[in-house]
Image (cartoon, rainbow, N blue to C red; front, side, top):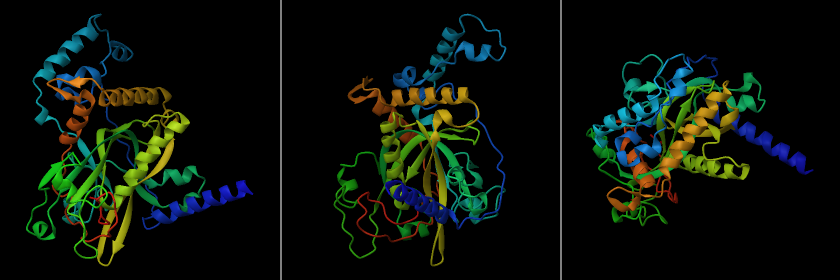
Amino acid sequence: MAKKVAATEEQNEIKEDVDRISPVSTEKTVSTEKTVDPPATTAIATASTAVTNTAATAIVKSKYEADGLDLPDSWDKDMQTIEDATQENVGVGEIQISRISIGQPTTKELAGERIGGWEGGVLFDNLNREVISIKGKAPWLLRKGVAESDVAAVHYLPFVPIMRLPSEYCLWPNKEERQQGQTMFHWKELDPMIQRVREGLWPPKGTWKAPVKGAAPPVTEHLNILGYGLNDDGSLRTGLMIASFSKTSFRTGQRLVSSCIAQRMSKLPFWGRVKWLFTEKHTENTQTWYVLRFADGPKLLEYGTDPEEMKDLFRQCFAEAKALSDPSPSDGDSKVSKGRYLQELYINAAVFDSDSEVGMQDGGEGGDTSGSTDEPAF
């Protein structure tokens, strides 16, 4: 009897997944895979010599000798000297890291003349303005055995989460200010205990109370997760990126973090399993918007077509997570660890694109303890 109940529950779960993405076109498409060179060092880590030696992985001689290069015996030492000299000239303010953004009806590439490859619901790099999602049949449903004819096409990105970074608490322009052309936040904090943050969040995180039914709290919490985007074959599709969850997608971010933490029961680290990020279309009255969702994928070491490449990526994620967790005091501030310093460095280097909060639906329901609302996420 227990097995029958479990099977029924799994069938219901699959049906819910199918129904969830059914609004998306079922047109069969083939994506063009893009690749990026696996990073030999972490770009953000090079911004500070206080953390670089911990976070960076050496551009080792053996990696290039395997490609047929004849290199001197002093290669590893010389490369470290070159990297150190370069890092001395790099200012923290010069470093930027991309966020994963969603193509909304108000996104400039969609609101004006359409650009090839762009359509509602795509995931894109908010710095380079490049589409990074893949359009195709939902792979998590195909892996569950759902008939391909019953699976809709979605915009998705295989994502390897490395670590939950600090949340950002932002005061964004209200509706009137947005109509006047103001799009960037008034202020941003990383400390949830600061008074102006608490005054703008729902209890228990804050003290804000809705003056009228349906009012939205003024402060938005952005839940941030650092990771890599992959191609279907397991090769890197993006460099390090931050997936931010807020408003309607906030609970999705919470579930993603919970899923990664729960992997420890299976002796898997935070980055031990691939997650498929995808977008979901919503329409209310005359407004249409897309929110970020996720589905569990296979173990990282079992993903893709090249086991050695997956092992390299696993080790790279470990190196990143180790640097971000370094408990030793950072230079010049004994109260802040090197790991926390690096985490905040990543967050402050990840800029919001200018239209990231434009076109938000106003209103929302109370009782969201995250301080988010039922408004669109991006």
